[in-house]
Length: 517
Image 1 (cartoon, rainbow, N blue to C red):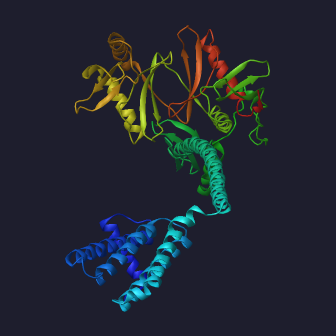
Image 2: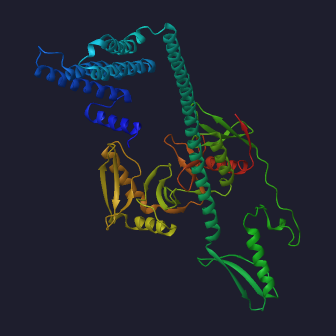
Image 3: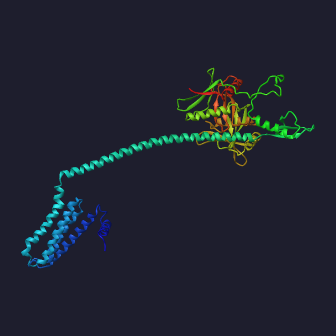
């Protein structure tokens, strides 16, 4: 047997399909009551018309018409969003009116003796429905309306408070997002620096492993054991200086050189007569005290830069770029202290090929003029240093066999490139030119200078001395990935003075203190 809830669900589903989604179950139920009233009214009128109107009052047309009236009134009232008490009064009134109909049927045809009671009961039902559907809403007390309004105001106030809290939470989230974005940018910058440091360490280890010489242990004509260090070109770089009666002792002497040569200091002695005795012991030379100080400051663009100021007030070096944070500038100082001492000189006369490893750990070459301009660079990277060197050698020896192409790029600048027989780009301009004639002039310079270029290997970093556009000589410290780590900050009238400035930086930078500007 179907329960009331199941009946309501079926009625609601039917109403939703035929009419529309009801707000409450009373809406669907009231519509059904109204439809029933219409049907009963039509049937009752039909029966009344079919009977003899001049005879006594017909029984069933009256019953159907009276029931139809109740349903036609109750149906719309039930559908209204009335208070629960008003809806209950409508149901009670309908039941009272319908209760009068069985009484009428049982008393018919002699119902007139009970007519006043039957009609009174029926009328009472109509009155109760009218009270529930009309008078209760109209006569509702002002206190109830005020209570409802107050409740609504409280709900609105609570919603406003929730909205305020949500807005505050949103503002906090936006601030947190900005801070998180800043931290992410900082971490990314630090990751780039860390990757560069790791690349430097890898290059340093590679240099230590990548020796161009070998130790040779042998027995001389006097049956004494000796060792010598010989370069791959055949030259003897060093030897033991004395013979050993036992092979084991010669091996120990060789191992001592391996341990102590790397990082050993240099003592300059003018004359051979001033050399210390062979058995004279000495303490390792202490590092020279620096006469300069690193200064880190924030420039007008919000970037951090460093400079190396001598005790005489002159700035002898400064950073070649700005850094997004002070910590990045500090790390750059650490690299400068480490690099300047062992950094080699790259001497361009008038040009030279630099062979270096880029940020992607590939080997490349670039053709640099002594004025510091990069005339050409390799069109691709190589997995091994020797491959990059061989590519530069081929270009030097066969520059006349290649065909230059001058073209206009998407930025409306003119560039040149050099294609090999396999259609691969073996060299390009590396920069754009404002006019085609300027790019053609660059091609002429490359054709002229390339055969004269020496191949120069960059370790971790190297000093370049060049002549600027005003005819002054400057230096810069270039990392093997191409980045400028430091520069002279000023020009010098003579090339030798630029080299003297480099030596001053080499002496003072490794141990220089640091202070804020």
